[in-house]
Length: 125
Image 1 (cartoon, rainbow, N blue to C red):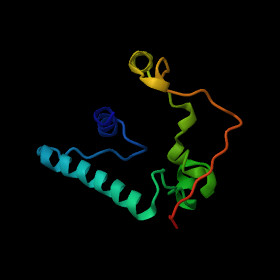
Image 2: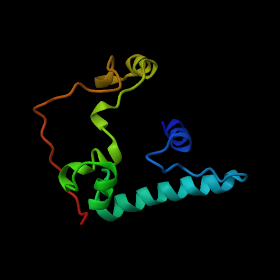
Image 3: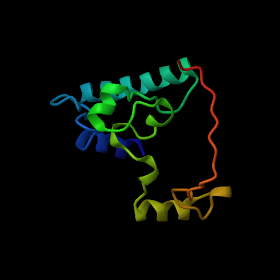
């Protein structure tokens, strides 16, 4: 959830970047979170997209590996591998026990479907 994600970004971050907590004044940290959420909403409205944007240009690819190829970089930029992300056993157990309707009895992740196809429409340029 958002609290766990914020804690991870405060302590671990992505690469060398971490969420700033405002040091001695937590109000500044809250402003940072508010600015992040406002930016996410603005980009969602502006580009009619809820997906991660690809910022892996040639310089980023040189620093972190991979190729500056727009069709794939957004799902693995900065050395991340989303396919390899997993929930903890506790999170998976919680999901199984609290699922409702079509999600009843399911864990946090779906099985990988190697035949899956991706189709998307966006106004991003």
